[in-house]
Length: 285
Image (cartoon, rainbow, N blue to C red; front, side, top):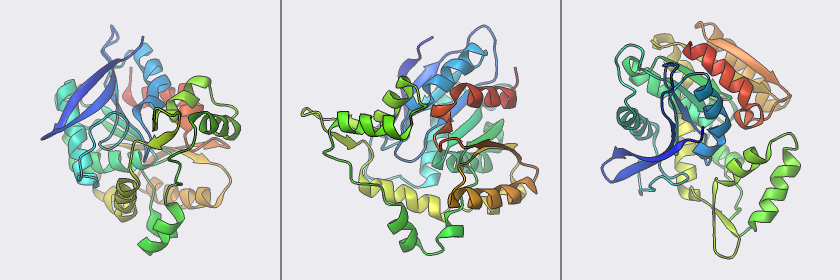
């Protein structure tokens, strides 16, 4: 089943675009899917379709500033973006009534955002799942923000032909489906001359990156009232070593961790069925 495309009110003058799969006959628990920094809701499409076949109502949203959602001048801190998600949940009917609180799954930065949401609004969230995210603590690697900013500033891709970017993505990710490549290309607006530019501007990207840098998941875990599950990628690089250390700290608080060894950071794009099946297990039938 193809999802509906809806506009969900998030804040005064701000709406979020969302892909929505309404409840089928299964009546399963809702799942809210949150993309990562500079990404978009379409990267979750294959996961959403499988979850819906498994009986769940599902929604994947474009965060403010991303994709087809509104792009206000401000509000790129975790608290405001979390408030956007709560408003979207209200519009979707994902309420605090037992059985209607969603599992909130976020990839990368979206995982940390989902963790913050579960910490602030435990009555609204059944569980949080971080998909190669949720435990990211950038200050472990970069105690100084300026060092982090220099290391993780996004490449300047504006003006690149879309065809060139598509070829680059296919070269970097040979195991991805064509649909996964197209979903990732949707991170960019296509201009009349066939070139692209990111939907998320550079300055707003850096605002969100700084919010992620300031976010310390380990400080939230001791009093987190909702279950947290981590689906993490070990690619054998230096970041994976840092993730292993973060995961060990999380497991001390009862967090369940599953590792995808050798997978891509965008594991939800590369292995959507496996990720969807894990989310189904968390959400319950």
